[in-house]
Structure formats: structure tokens, C-alpha cells
Image (cartoon, rainbow, N blue to C red; front, side):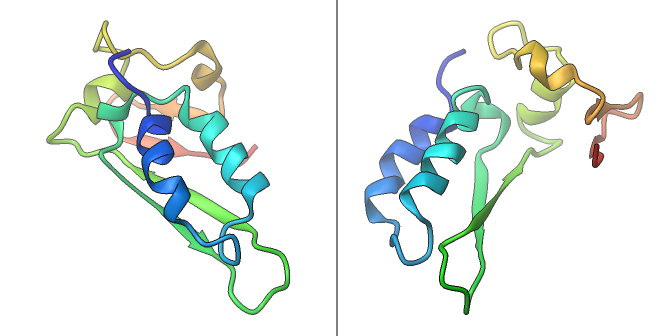
Length: 104
């Protein structure tokens, strides 16, 4: 793996408000980011819950069909492989190479 999504997160992390993203939530996101090759998701974002006391957050990744993301998600990029954890049935890459996230 050339670099991971966590490398992006290390860069932006110090600029994120703890009122929006709690440090423990960011640590959880960063832990997941270490497994995802950076070229797979050049765009990512955070969805913060507003009007609640805890700074809970969801994390989204966008893999483009035009970029490296499609090949990485399909297991076709030998330099940027997803870990075996991502072959669990909750992550399914179908024959049309669209990635579907299914709830367990």
C-alpha cells in the first residue's frame, strides 16, 4: 500500500473541532483508515450530528469508477489491496464492479 486514508486524516485531524468530532470518534475512524488505501478514496467526509451533546460522527468514503478506487475495491490492484476483513459479506463487489454496502 502506497499510503492509507489515515495519512489524509493525520493531516486534517488537528484542524477538526472536538465539538463536532470527538477525539475517540476520530481515533476510531483513523483506525479504519489505516486499512483503506489512499488511492481508493480520494474524497471523504464526515457527517456530524448537530444539536446533540456528544460529538458522534459518521465517516463516508467515495471511490470513483474513473480513478483507482474501482480496481482497488475489485481486488485488481496488487499494490493497493484491501485486507481480508473487507471480503466479509457486509462488503460485496458484484460483477458490474459496483460496491454495495449491506447492513449485517
